[in-house]
Image (cartoon, rainbow, N blue to C red; front, side, top):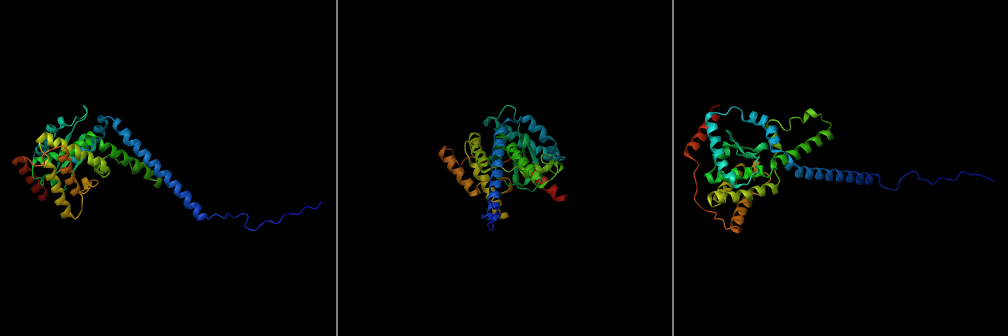
Length: 291
């Protein structure tokens, strides 16, 4: 019997498949899995955030709130006290949980902004306050921010911010110290981006509160007209604090729509911000300009 080595066909060790195509397929699958995992983790955080004790939020926020506030003057404290009184008058209409406390802070800055943060802390900047034509408009702003606190939007937003930051740190090889400042100092504001659905929910409930408080929703259109004018002057469609909102013109339309559906008057008595508060705000502005 004669044994012979068979002739090996040419190209037997080479795949007929395109390696670039295989790589693209594997990479696409890996990216899809990562995106799905991030989405599921984000949804889990969104759901579980409501179980975080509010007292823990307050403890977490206390150090950087003190840092951000600095040493306010007597005049600034008086403006903050006025904002607090107005908020306290409205909160009984909002069915807040028993452990939720709303704390208003006034910031003497040209920034046109207002923001709800952890622990029920709400910051109102002079740049926005001085532009508001009435207490009605201010009440709409405060109610909007209080609703964010009520619905636990800040802790949900920051939880997701922490997730994405930590994922980036892992993927890029950063150390833990690189992300240790996530919940400290003013860096927290960078993670307070609320979703469009969250912003819409805050707008809609704030409209209800505004109607119950003043028996009309005029303050909403006054606030949104200020934001619209500011956005046009700055060349930006939406201000930073409302960057996930629909366009301001759509918010004005939504005010008319929601008010119409509920038979809420869109016009009514306009309550002026107390004259002495307006004077204090202008004095704060002059003091900052002189510094």
